[in-house]
Image (cartoon, rainbow, N blue to C red; front, side):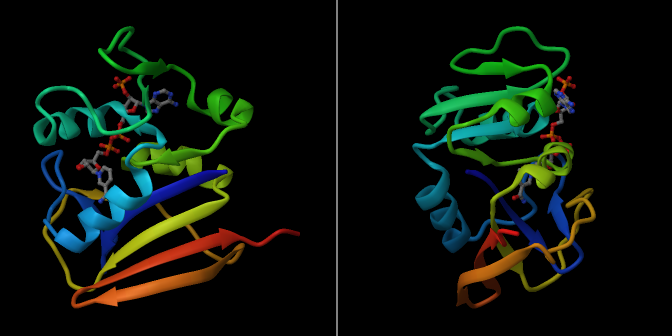
Length: 157
Ligand SMILES: NC(=O)c1ccc[n+]([C@@H]2O[C@H](COP(=O)([O-])OP(=O)(O)OC[C@H]3O[C@@H](n4cnc5c(N)ncnc54)[C@H](OP(=O)(O)O)[C@@H]3O)[C@@H](O)[C@H]2O)c1
């Protein structure tokens, strides 16, 4: 199944200056629990921002796919030049971990969503693209102070 995982504030802000606009331990723990040790796809900008969190370039995932049209080689990762073909062909589980451009491309392929709602506004320059949840059902959520950590699954038709 393809799962999209992201955190956004009440204005759908997801990023600032190529980094997360916030640091919430509970959200990091949620990300760690569900994305670490899985196969992930991220855009090249998100990859660059991750390197500031993991300067050794060894990311904590089972396998790393990086979407880029320009790059041909990245240490410890496989480049995806054509995201749509990659997602169309994908049979194994995959976590999509950002950023905005890649969420937009991948949303139609999502079987599940893990959304962290940050219940206050933050300054940002990157927003989650327009989407709707009518084909998804909320299967679980927990709350923690300013956060709601949610899990949705696509409704089978
Ligand atoms: N809050 C969250 O949960 C969260 C999660 C992740 C990221 N973020 C934030 O989101 C921001 C980055 O998002 P972003 O939208 O600027 O960048 P992005 O989606 O991470 O990466 C964009 C890059 O992906 C590549 N790309 C785009 N379309 C493609 C396609 N069809 N096929 C192959 N490659 C393609 C291009 O790389 P090339 O230019 O190399 O060709 C493009 O520059 C940062 O601020 C980051 O911190 C937030």
